[in-house]
Image 1 (tube, helix red, strand yellow):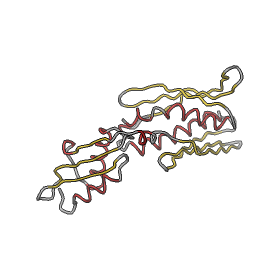
Image 2 (cartoon, one colour):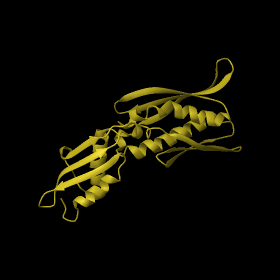
Image 3 (cartoon, helix red, strand yellow):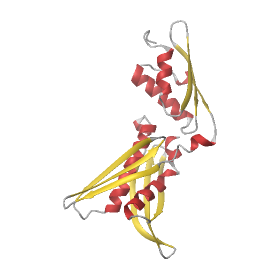
Image 4 (tube, helix red, strand yellow):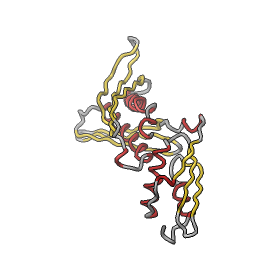
Length: 218
């Protein structure tokens, strides 16, 4: 371990990571890290947090740590699990003869994640554009939760359509294909049209993924 890197430096770096509740770093007489003890909540899996710790220490401090020196204890409870849900904040849509753009904002843990999608021409599929912007906002959240690029999922729209539920209620159906290293799945989301179809498209795309966020970050 480099002499200018102290256990306190290591602790400060790890404490900034998501899910981390507490950190204790034990060093030897030569200033080298011997043990790292971490407690986390339920928002991320221990293996993911372990990889995040290794990546953060390597990128920020230039410190390579054997994963066997990292001990992670997960504290289970009902409250942390609620953090694995995104809330719709707002959306904006602009369109002219040549260009259309949708912006969707979502929130989690008092942070806002924004997604943009644009297309050429006024005759673009507006609902698909809003759904795509929502997926980009979800990706922003997932990318902030999954530092390793190879672990990040790829999200693609499979379907965005207007449907009728119960013979009278108009709704938007969104299909999302999610691909990651361990496989792929097709998720469906549905949202009734109450205020406008744009918001319904955003909520349907969010509904397709919101209950599956743990599948991505575990």
